[in-house]
Length: 586
Ligand code: ADP
Ligand code: ZN
Image (cartoon, rainbow, N blue to C red; front, top):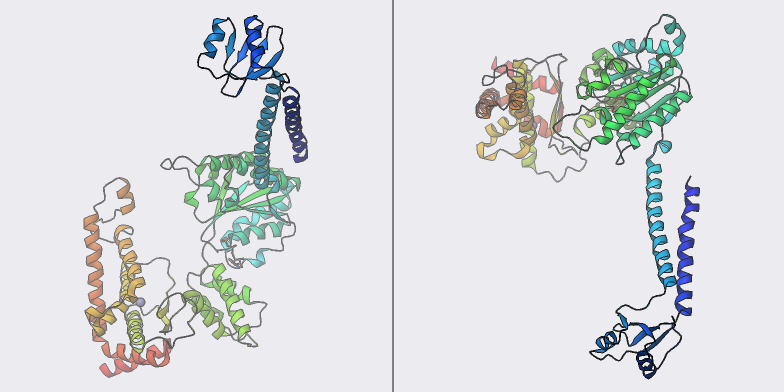
């Protein structure tokens, strides 16, 4: 196609060259060859032979005789030259005499240049377009995906929900005999890393059909119409195979709810979405093509996508629970050299980890074991990997840290740890350290939150108290004027929690059961009252924390001493200290 264009582009090039050559030729030959003396000109004038005189500012004037012949002569440059000629009945033109052939060739040259420009512009557009165009879209198609349900641990409900799809892909005839209509599309929704892509691959693998994967963000292009073209070519490709699973990751990139507020600029998205919907309604349920889309948020999607006949099956893929986490960890450590790993303990420690994070944990542990030249992957490697994932790498060079800073960090962390032990005994504090991390923390306290579906008001308050423990310890030990910036992150998180309680969870006084988001939509929010309630609540909790720490100052100091001495202490160390001290008190 481009070759043909190139041939056409030769045409204006040739005419341009031709007219240029012609112009040079004409202007050379058409030179007004005859040059007469001024006296002869005056003679011609007096004998009324002249039809027109061409006068310009140039030193020569051109004279056209009545018989058509032309000659040049000197420009007298007298003031009333023109007037005299006019009086003699001679036409005077103030333009140079031009040859029509010359004019024609100049015009030809300019026109062919313009045509050339337009053609070049057009072909460059074609080129860039084809660069992004559907034909060049890399749809990763995998014939034998090599995944099946064995690769997906946990997610039992989701697996169940796609079982019939697999069956249908295997024998569509069976379903059409019953007149059953299979969903054309399904949407997997849930947090990132929960295994949505994995599940889609497993469906293709189980059914043994090709797997086409694209991402919604691939379709978002600058050129209107390109996205739509890509969708069409994707479907064309898939249909050429007969059966297939088409996977569209991040469907929200093209199928986001159209909100009226931010109009404009969504033309492209709309076209792509419409193309998708058209393609989906274009093929038959019995063809054996299933479209699986994934998104983090189902509620963000355009309702047009979710209607019957489109993506009409919605499957939630949730974060794994304890037993699923154990299975996922086992799966990812299966073919690795492991020794004495307590899977159930690790499953408990990894609350709110996604499948992807667990895979990462196993992999990170393997890397650490390899670096250590250890024969096996053991608990300690998982431990290190776990800390790295949660807090970042430990800083190796710690010589620069001043003793006073270490002391501040130790009291701060001990404050968190002590409050956690006192108010949330079910969240096991597994590690307290004053080794700074590459993520910027001076130290950290790691606790394993209890697995629950909901958090009640009391629990949230206690969590806030744990967050405030660090700053409170600093204040008690060093005085109000010596508190540090180390609590920055803690304060951000506690502020977030307090405001959520009051404005979103219906746990406050000023709004009661109303939520701030909806209220401000209607312009009803009373921010003053909410603000002072949040502030009062956090101050009240802070006082409580300070009381607990003041009462347990001895324990706090022992913890700090041990921290400064060992840098990192674990749950058993903490229990020892608390146990000892409480014995003394008792
Ligand atoms: P999503 O598409 O939901 O963001 P992915 O499917 O891309 O998540 O998951 C990323 C990786 O996490 C997978 O390749 C896999 O290694 C791991 N993973 C996630 N969930 C599971 C699971 N249920 N079982 C086994 N591995 C999982
Ligand atoms: Zn802190």
